[in-house]
Amino acid sequence: MNENVVILGAGLAGLGCARALPGARIFEAESEPGGMARSHTHDGKTYFDRGCHICHSKDPAWLDLLRVNDSSVAATSRSRVVNYWHGHWITYPVQNHLLELSPENRIRALADFVSAQIVHRGRIPANYLEWCRFHYGEYLTRNFYEEYTRKYWRTPMEELATDWLSGRLLPSQIEKVIAGAIAEQPEDQPAFASFYYPSSGGYFSLFAPLYEDIRVVCGARAEELDPKKKKVTFSNGRQEDYEYIASSVPLPELVQMIKEAPADVRRAADALKHLRLLCVDMVIARDNLTPNHWFYIYDNDVEASRISFPGNLAPGSVPAGHTALQAEIFRRTDEAVAPAELAEQTMHRLARLLKYKPDDVVALHVREVPMTYVISDYARAPAVKAVHDWLRGLDILPMGMYGEWKFLWSDAAFRSGERVAQSIAGGKA
Ligand SMILES: Cc1cc2nc3c(=O)[nH]c(=O)nc-3n(C[C@H](O)[C@H](O)[C@H](O)COP(=O)(O)OP(=O)(O)OC[C@H]3O[C@@H](n4cnc5c(N)ncnc54)[C@H](O)[C@@H]3O)c2cc1C
Figure: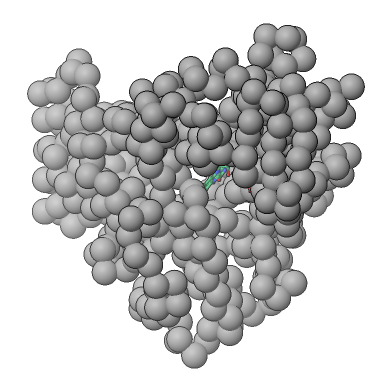
């Protein structure tokens, strides 16, 4: 059953597809399955993820599948997330907590915010810069969103589209913003206000049991696809015949694998941009460094954009008397990186912010993740369409975050694989 299907990639999309197509063959380039949802450890005790990952899904069937009510999963009912901005700690998101700014900045932020609601009312933003200006006003856009975008997306705001914002940024709510400028407000708004995280083993422990029934061939990177002969060739020389390919291989790499790809499709694939990530993993011989689950750093003299604390996500997962933290540093693919230097610099800069001594750091590792967020610029949507339209005629079905080439939360990546499986099973591929 389903032996005619080859699945490329055993991340969550590959998992969703394989579970829905028993008997399909699944191949994974890395030595272990899991993709972006994989966790890693340097000492066998403390686990880190590929950038901060939590389960904040609202999909009951997905939560059931992950058994989030088991004792092996920690449930957090109220996330603690803050911003670090030029020496100030401000509750996330800043527009709901203007009271935490100095009186002078609060007045400017509030005045600009209210004026934006009047001046831009009903206007459709042309890009991310306009979206922020229309929703949050000039002061917050310039001082927070633009500063952070430069560091995180590494792309000018006016070059970014708005199709990636849903579920990430909240449209402004005037009553809430004014209330937060007058008095301290509890924060229960963001999409990730409550979440689940495994008690041990990192984020991947949520999914590890789901891989038990699936025989993934690891260390098998697909390198060449011949859609006429319906043959895929792997890095170790192995070849497999197929009728359908379900692929979570990043679109640019997939197009490169197909020799007969026409020039316009190659050009479209080349236009797709993404970020890479350096994870600086640290263990510090100090406890209670912060009560927060994670925080964002706006200042450009610190390279890291987001700092998360695995021991706060899952209490008890870090040795007593210690704090584990992961700093995330993003880079475009055309930027040079010096991982060891960045790790060292990050360790010293964070010592200032979190008030530990560099000598307290008992472990410092840096891990490079070559592909993380796709950049939603204006080239993305038409380029993805051009590649997808061409693939449709070849019985190659893209799925997951890098097959769809758009940000997907974990549940959506899994469902994307399931959808591809359904269209193959239903003969609609
Ligand atoms: C920094 C970051 C933070 C995130 N945080 C969260 C979060 O908090 N909560 C949440 O729900 N989601 C989060 N996500 C999203 C989540 O990680 C993804 O939705 C999910 O892991 C994507 O799964 P995938 O299978 O689509 O892609 P991947 O995980 O990338 O899987 C694709 C697989 O294909 C393999 N592969 C690639 N090329 C080949 C080839 N040529 N041959 C064979 N195999 C190949 C890769 O090795 C990989 O294992 C985050 C994502 C990022 C980038």
